[in-house]
Length: 247
Ligand code: CAA
Image 1 (cartoon, rainbow, N blue to C red):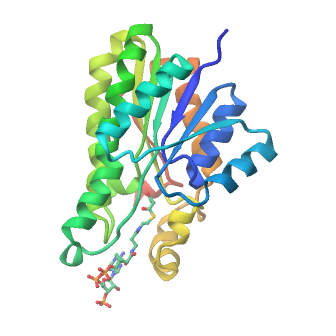
Image 2 (cartoon, protein in one colour):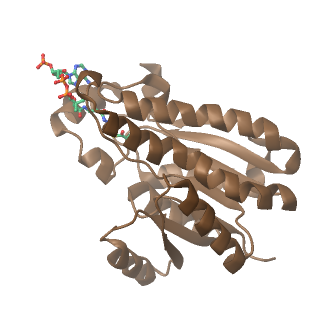
Image 3 (spheres, rainbow, N blue to C red):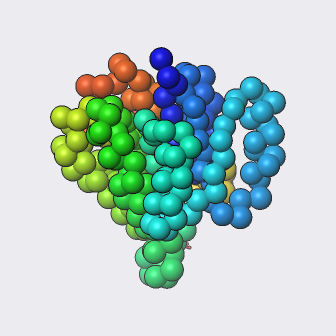
């Protein structure tokens, strides 16, 4: 059988890297997009080569709809199909609302939510036309609960799931599933960059499991949703947050 193709946005971050490794291990051809000007690209690609993980890298500003249309069109010509799309690209600009600029708002909404529209629309027809596809939107516990300093991020992440449920209805009869995965605080650079006293004193005490999540744990869930076995899960928002939603 021809290898399936998985496209992962924001693929060179902590969770993105785990997603690339796992989907490659599961037999997918993996395409990894990264933001323009990402200076870690070559080192990241070399590290994947050393591990035997073959990845096709692609520079893309996911907040730019025209750029997404053009890149997806080019990729479809090169690889024939995109079977799995993981909308993983995301940024934070954490500030209380009274200090948040319009630029902080638009940057986060553009990268975290507009990107889902920008990427999904051009791949969708190839999925529905072939009768098989998986769209997996990486949201956050903070889209479900809200978080101090994250009006922009939480709004974008909550918005993703509205998108998921609506599109899931539209394509359910065409073999395409659409799901949201909402991780909690993972051991990634995004979390390492937040104020460590906030993490230690406010966040960790609210995680019943008592530790940060591992990107590999989330990648395992995404791999299931991307598999044949995941075909009856659609429109779901699956939380993986160490029990944080009980607080
Ligand atoms: N709960 C309650 N009070 C808090 C608070 C919290 N979580 N965080 C800060 N405060 C308090 C401060 O103690 C301070 O109080 P005092 O004035 O009495 O000293 C006050 O709020 C600060 O208010 P400001 O309006 O000045 O806040 P700020 O604009 O400086 O923002 C912050 C502070 C940037 C939001 C900082 O608290 C922060 O970075 N918090 C972490 C936000 C967060 O959880 N980010 C998650 C990043 S990881 C991620 O997003 C991945 C994922 O999906 C889970």
